[in-house]
Each structure stands twice: as C-alpha cells, then as structure tokens.
Image (cartoon, rainbow, N blue to C red):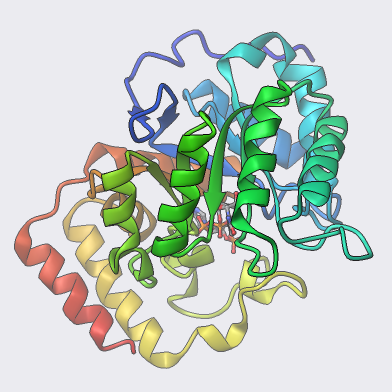
Length: 332
Ligand SMILES: NC(=O)c1ccc[n+]([C@@H]2O[C@H](COP(=O)([O-])OP(=O)(O)OC[C@H]3O[C@@H](n4cnc5c(N)ncnc54)[C@H](OP(=O)(O)O)[C@@H]3O)[C@@H](O)[C@H]2O)c1
C-alpha cells in the first residue's frame, strides 16, 4: 500500500541544533542497531520507521555492521527508502558509521582511509543512496594516525558522499584533537555520538565540556541503557526482551537484585512526574542543553511512541535530581 505521511508531522518544533552547525535533529532520533536486521520482523520495523517519520522524527541512525547479520539493517532501511520514503529524501537525516569489524582481513575494521572509504561505498550501495547526511568514525583507532582517519572523513564530504561528519566513542582529549584536524581541513566535526544514560555518565567527566567548547553537538546513544531504564525488568526478564535474546550485548547478569530495586524506586518517581520510567530516563538525558538529541532504539511503534512523549517534560527539580542520584547510588 502506498505510504502517505501524516501532513501534520512538522506541527511541533522538536528540533535542536547540533552544536554550531546547520544540522537540526529531532530531540528523539531513532537508531537501527537492533530490531531492524534480517533476524527481525520486517513489517514491524517498517511500521516503526514510518510512525517515527509521521511524528517528525526525521533522523535515522545506522552503521555498516547493524543487523544481525551485519549490513542487514542498511539493506532493510534501503528497502523502506525505495518503497516508502524515497519522495521525502530531502527531509531525512540518515547517518552511517564505520569502525567495527565488517569484513575479513586488516581493512575490515578500525580507522584506515582504505576501510572508511570502502565501507561508506558499501553502505551507500546497501541503502541505495547517493549520499548520507552524516558519516561517522565509529571508534578511535589507536594504530592509525588520527590525521588519516579525519582526512578520510573530510574527503567523504568533498566526494559528495556525506554532507556532515562526526565521531563516536572518542574520549575528550582525542575528540579535541580530531575536531582541530577537521577544522583545519574545512570540514568541522558537527556531532559526537556517545553513550549516555542515568546509568552511564562517563561523558560528564570532560567530554560534554569539550563538545560545548568546540561547538559540537552530542547525540546520546543507549539512553535507556538498552532497555534497563524501562519498566520491563521490574518483575522478571520477559521472553521477548533484549536481555533474553541470544545475540546482542545486554546480558542477563546486568539485571542484579540491587538494580531492580533501584529501578522500582525510579519507576515510582517517574509515576509521580506523570511519566513512564522510559520517558523520565530520556528526559533526564535531554535536560542538559549540551545534548542535542537522544538516540533511542525501539522494538515496535508502541515503544517508540511511549519514548517520544519524554519531550513533554524535561524539567527536573533539584530534589528530583538528588533523589535519582541517591536511588542509583544504591544500585552500585
Ligand atoms: N555509536 C555507537 O557505538 C552506538 C552503540 C550502541 C547504540 N548506538 C545507537 O543508538 C541507538 C539506540 O541504542 P539502544 O537500542 O541501545 O537504545 P536504548 O533506547 O537504550 O534501548 C532500546 C531498547 O529499549 C527498550 N525500549 C525502548 N523504548 C521502550 C519503552 N518505551 N518501553 C519499554 N522498553 C523500551 C527496547 O528493548 P526490548 O527489545 O528489550 O523491548 C529497545 O530495543 C542504536 O540503534 C544505534 O543507532 C550507537
């Protein structure tokens, strides 16, 4: 059936500027790391993506290796682009990345020029695109000169295969050096993709300050700590949850009795705020003005819509923030 997007999709201003750039991103953006591979139900993934677009969520984040199997999220997204979203290409912000293992041999991962350029060509082919909006170095490569990795990124823009470049998982000092190299090449680093949630606050120890100083946006990934910061694990580990699945990175062992106790208390606090735990956890990340967007995962459109409502209340009182910290201190 021909897809017709909701005509009211831009009715709300949900967009934040990424650092000092011209790139505007929805405060809630959708990532395709899990739930969109060939192992997943294509119709459900399509419905989630189209529901996102219907709500003005125009940013979709991919990487060469998303699936499983690796590459299949890009293939599925390419199919949705071809069949449904093609007329709206100029409204979309599509990102992909290279850095983790994608193919065999010494050029199948990390940060060499050869790997990055070959990987982007493969990604474009899988998605049926001429260019992506953002191309990221997915991780810092300690064995390749940073100049080589950054020059390769800048060249993707010169070649017309990417519009903006970003980095992901780089520490604060390396981010500063990368930003300076990119600046000197005339292709500024516009965004940093970093893990950030109530349960993982490493970015607060320097990275966010560096990003602010350099005028770089921050898109926070795994803001729900892969689903831990939701109501799903309060009683048991549901069969269809990420922790119960045989692939992926969320282990059952992460769900300790101390954590569940803390999640129950957070859930009660969220209810007092009139939010689900997921909504409160996302709002908590968005409260920092240095954060451009939260990059969420969603297994279906219901999760997406529940999470999206976080933008309705991102204010926290000092007492609430203190309470959250006290509760989480008990989970460690
Ligand atoms: N740059 C990097 O190195 C890197 C690394 C990781 C991720 N990322 C990016 O960040 C994106 C998001 O990461 P993530 O999937 O870990 O994010 P997340 O939002 O922390 O976790 C998503 C999971 O939380 C659960 N969930 C989501 N909304 C829910 C709701 N409203 N109620 C209950 N449960 C809910 C679902 O788990 P169930 O399936 O269990 O229901 C869902 O699959 C990725 O797709 C990717 O684009 C980047």
